[in-house]
Length: 446
Image (cartoon, rainbow, N blue to C red; front, side):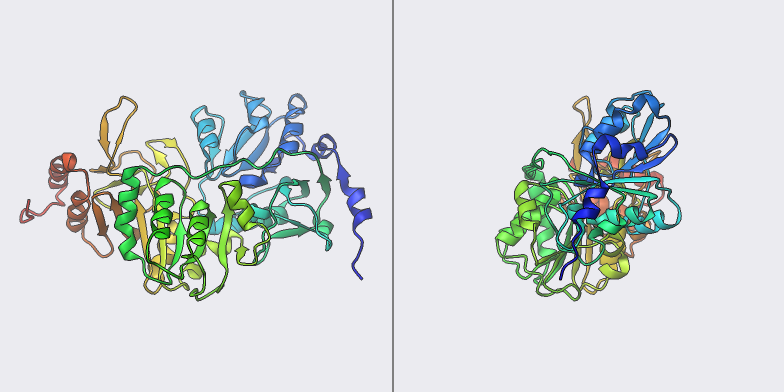
């Protein structure tokens, strides 16, 4: 006979306004990640602005608006932080209203366990099941370790959240919850994939020949990974697997085309593994109650040791720029924070250690600056930019002009390879810069 949790549920049920009274001045409050943002609680906490001071809030890949930020540009009452910026959080950083927390994603759980203080966690969850569990849904990658660390746990029941099957840490039991909040929510925001540009499609076409049947894929966020997914869906590849920190519509497209089966995976066979998900409502419908999907904490998904166990693991991420030494900037433009370290380093290390594995970092060869002037993404040398991936760990670099493998290459070989995939208009200038840095062989052919 199942235990009846209705009385415990009733005793812990609070209005948003009642629940946020748990927050005190000086507290650290966590909003977790993505759809885990507690919309009703955030709104109620913002209403307490004038009676609270120096409340510090953490989030990650969170869509706006965040009411506690919007209501207090002085930051005397609320100070917001993110360890991977969404487009909205990037805008907050530009205004000085968000502070970035550097984090390598596979260390997410350890950071919270050993170093980070959490006074109150507020997290959106799916409705409680008959066993007394609330599901973290597409927020499974980060929620569990934060909830365990928190002094006070408040769950906000979102009636629209999909219920996701998990490997572990995908839910929290009512016995571990202090307060429960209910209320009407807007339907989940529909985030359909952006249409790839011609240059994105060309980059994807350059990568496809390196992928073999039975490979397991990690695709980052952005137009290029989406283009790769679309090209794979049109290819002859078969029996591909999913092991990714972020699940997007690219995987749904591969599944619909019959390419994504997860049959050849060495671990989690038959299961598409992910940590968090952002995408269309169709994506969330696909993930909902799907026994072919397993959500795990990022300490598992992004652990290089775990990734390396998957034969033919292919990691595909994007970046902002690369210098001719092979250093990669993927999270900032100059000193402007635009995203985060995320899992790029994790998957570089893991895929490189996989039997038959490959790690690709992709970019268009050029971009236009704010004045409309075309600039090269391959640079002579970074000067002040934040380095995401060190040259010692970078594997394949891809532009629309080709693919080069930097592993085991000397400085002059790296310079030669990278210049070969730069936009032709910038190659002579890059050669001159390489020569001045004494990493261009005089015997190199032009």
